[in-house]
Image (cartoon, rainbow, N blue to C red; front, side, top):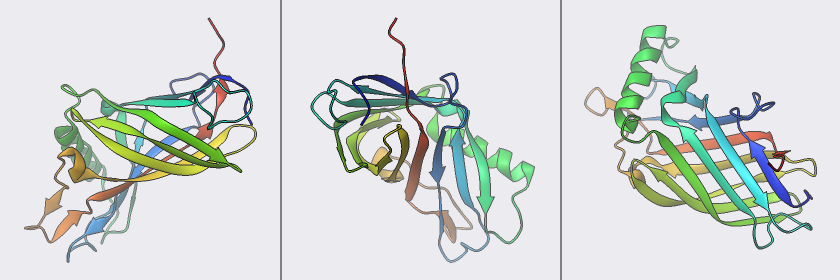
Length: 193
């Protein structure tokens, strides 16, 4: 596994422009065919992994933390719907998203692990996500390779953070309460200062 040290992930770190943090939404309701399933990406996010045990990730002392700049969230992809999502619809969706997430009052979404476990390349990370002033538990699972390539996924229920999922047409079209968060990238060592 990776040696003890501090590792970076996320596009705010040099050489990490290919790292990705995405939120996938799905449609619900009888009018679901009209709307779009969205992939919302974060342009600015950063994660660090601190490993104190030289033998394996998952031993006592491994800590994962991440910060997402709320204002950097944007609609990267839109799937389904009766017609493709227009630029105007995309801008309107992003405006609605900022109205819900209130980046002026809550500029970041933060994650701090409470436990990290790796067995045969399978990664299990549990922790707290602070969003809109509320902290709630989250469990992420995925994989980490011998070279530090990470792929993680979790399902978050928006209403646990007080978010009422978007709806239109008197609720006939709405976003599902659960969204899937995916993280991928390659951990690289952070040089000691």
